[in-house]
Length: 108
Image (cartoon, rainbow, N blue to C red):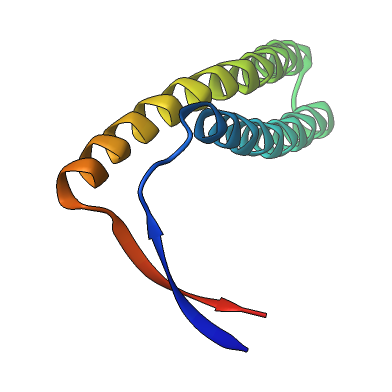
């Protein structure tokens, strides 16, 4: 394996935005699955150990948490894209002022 130095002089703003949008979308899906599992567990516990009032409140809370988790997936994706574009813009300004970002890469 050979080592070489790579110098970053520019980040693509749209590609960085797309990368962070996809990353945040996947993160949102993971959080959605965790929230859904928690909602199911809470509902089952209230079904087994609570009365009808507790079950109704737990089910309403669970439904709202699932809906909000779904909305969060969309918000995470959009905000991820916007922040990716902003980060790429700032990095490009800093790289332009400092002359580039150098790092070592190992080529397989």
